[in-house]
Length: 136
Image (cartoon, rainbow, N blue to C red; front, side, top):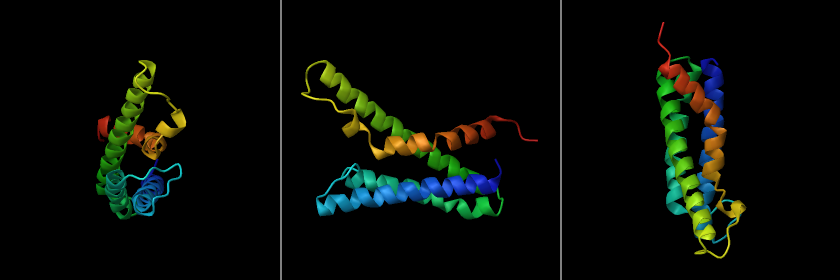
């Protein structure tokens, strides 16, 4: 991957993250909810992650390596939140298995943060491989 491809992928993930974050915040105030939950602090966290992604796009398009640090930080934050919500879904499943919860619907546990972390996984793998390889 070259810097422009990384920049395009980072812009795509950043834009999706920003849109989902805006919807999460809007749904708090409108009272409506689609498959995106109404979560004020989750939406604010997604907007911060999107800002990190989108901050490095200019450097990536001009082929500066400084943009990779923004992409790497954004992917780390995305993976942390994706793993956090995956663990929360696992805890809910465990509560259902133990009989403490009446129902467990995987579709209600599948939050957009989990899907965004899955979408950002190729970028994460590429950036960590690039980071761990020796520079020439």
